[in-house]
Amino acid sequence: MSLLDIILWPFNTPAVTFAGVTTSWGEVAGFVTGALCVWLVARQNPWNWPIGILNNLAFLVLFATSGLYADSWLQVVYIALALYGWWAWLRGGEDHSALPVSRTTATQWWALLAAGVAGTLLLVWVLTSFTSSTVPWADSATTALSLLATWGQTRKKVECWWLWIAADVIYVPLYAYKDLWLTSILYVGFMALCVLGLRNWTKALRADERVAA
Image 1 (cartoon, one colour):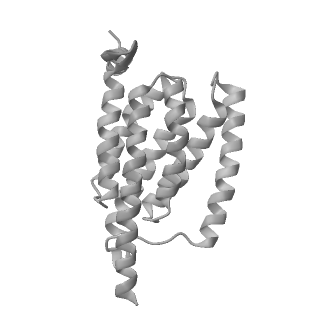
Image 2 (cartoon, one colour; image 1 turned 45 degrees about the horizontal axis):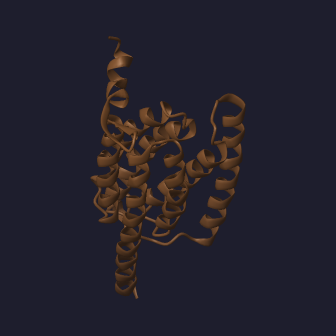
């Protein structure tokens, strides 16, 4: 057995079969680490970042073997952003203190819009030109939205939760289409956790604003 076979073993080994659809142990690992990661983010717990890296590694292989190439390579970017986000949450505030929740400025919104449109179009071209992707537009749009949301998350921008919700609305039917049913269900749960995160971060932001007033 080669090293690659050992790495891919959990992603090719069935964990459970329901209604004729098989779920692999790799997808189960992505489910557990993903749910824990988002729950920790909603609570502003910095341990979300190392748990998120484990989730990224699981999904990198899972998506690559499912033909979701943009989402697969997105996990590599996520890992780099996670390392930065981990540092920023702990040391990114004033005088290297913990980073507080803040709002996205108008200038930042325009920059995010431009980056999102350009990134989506670039990814569509790459996927249609160089891969066998059957869902280039959905794959590209969710990738762009997720990157923008992750940037907002690293800087504790409260509006990042709206970007995550927008991405999840597309992810749920996309993963169902690819027969990744457990992952699709996970992203329904993600949307619920996003609402919780939005509420918690908004509450923290308003508390800080009252103190500063």
